[in-house]
Image 1 (cartoon, rainbow, N blue to C red):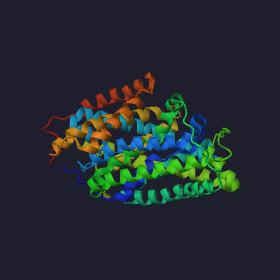
Image 2: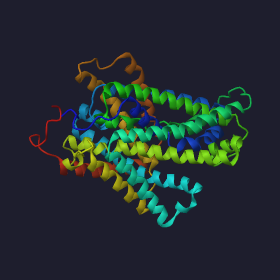
Image 3: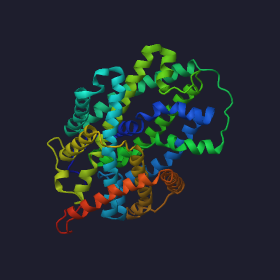
Image 4: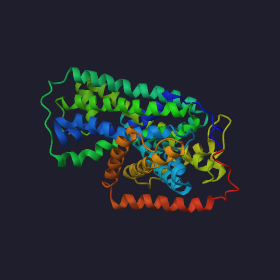
Length: 426
């Protein structure tokens, strides 16, 4: 199976929208003061270095996307290189963590929205806002990826335009930059992981390859250009903030206060609305990508075929609905813990496994295992990812192990004999 049963409605621009919105969520809006407090005038350069280092991972993923046109992203790369069970575990742990993260993110988004519209902050209106938000994303994804791309395009403009305006105004009104003071290495080490977290999420765009037109060309280009654009936005925003008079004063919402400095209450409200839009767009991108993980597993016979059922719109409707209902249930239960670190750990493990798969997949495609670009990018990407996993704690690993254990049970329940599984390479 070539992955052709799904309608290929997404092009290069759609992949770029997924990448940009996977990267820019709520984190960057709280990061400027944290970075400035830790490393001072070096903060913008730390983000620039962080983007350059993460580019090494993105380059490896760009190379990987040239080797398949089937959905699954990291799950597909690892399964094709190392076998179905390792691929399943990467896909399942990523999917599980992403569902919990989606549930957590909707509560964050509503909390920001309640600052503008207090009525939805609690009670039945709060529950209704959760259901409407996640339900709308689910329906939008079911009726076609083309519609998702159109909505994401609008959201991307609505969240980037105010940021770009704020950056221009902030830089125009900023004090003259002084010399960049190199901080102590211990200060960089203490804050580097927080800076790195702002750059995770690009891998979301690689998952719906089976619904992308010419993914072997569209995805590499969109991944690298999108990360470069986001890095420049982060750098410029941090630069504008660090040169402002409020830098170092400890505001809880630094970007909102920067907008208030130059635009008064109107500017602050506009950026608060931008944050809501940013989180909403990030969730939409995450919903689109993560809900495509289970059909990729079903296509390989690793989950029941129900998850791979195609709607009349050419989308994996059952998987999309399952993801949406699960996220709603977790969000309404109020019993989940915000597992941002767990979600990031699952991503880092997927990065490591995917980079390790690259030489084997290139050989299987009749190419040299390594080329000069990969020989430079892969070691940097591996070291960076492994270092980041070492910054987590035992609880994070035990929780991720719990997800993997549940996945193992499901794998052996759903496993079929080779004769019962449709040939996935046909």
